[in-house]
Image (tube, rainbow, N blue to C red; front, side):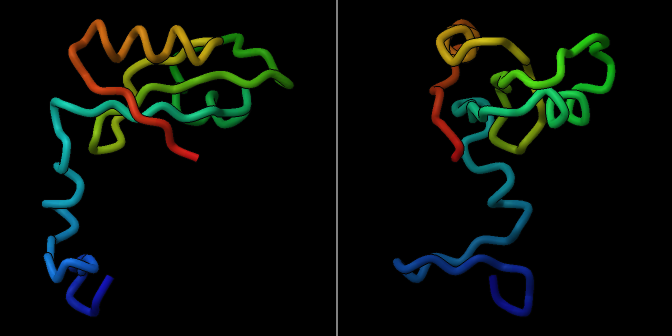
Length: 90
């Protein structure tokens, strides 16, 4: 990121943070593995998330949390049901 809050890629393409946040909007869903504690912070309306287990969150391209599930396969299925291309975040 440069001093103007713009991202510059190896190809020379420059995008603002707003443009970058909307990249893949409506087309891509990010799947991220979370601890129960992380899930509780991202999904504060869900009560009773067990501690000590890993869960999977589905996020819109802009980072908005969409769904929480207990398996990667279910997260992928949720993204595909919403016509989104699932990608993993490590």
